[in-house]
Length: 145
Image (tube, rainbow, N blue to C red; front, side):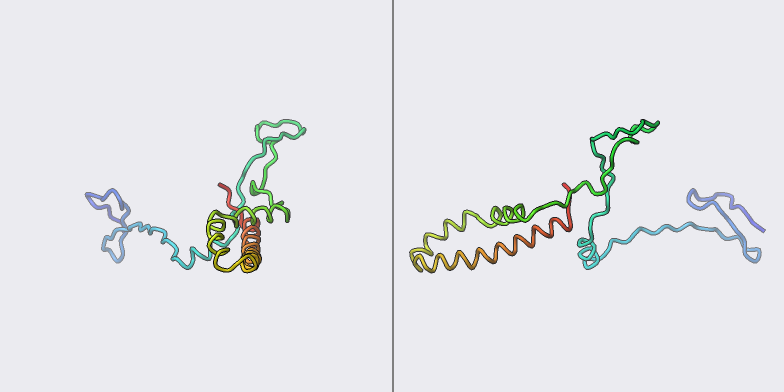
């Protein structure tokens, strides 16, 4: 046996009865919880989901009703075709800064030219490897924009 309440609430207007006692059915919605910091860090290392980017080149196939039928679609919109020379130029361009040249004057006065050359070789080797690794990460996990 079901009953309707005389003044139903705008949020829950369904009623039901159990053993002859009227009771209301209430719809409950929960907000999606924000992932914790650890889960967000782990998710940030996942590759970007493929987007539906469109190329501007048209193919020679016959036209259909949809104007996007002849348009070639790219999976990610990014091309993973960096060559070794590109990575080297990124590494060299990113590693050389004004602080290197400003600090080299006092290092030359204190340590002499041999120590300065040795320091440039050691630090240059370390920076080159770090920047090569960063370039590889940019290719593996691309971020457009």
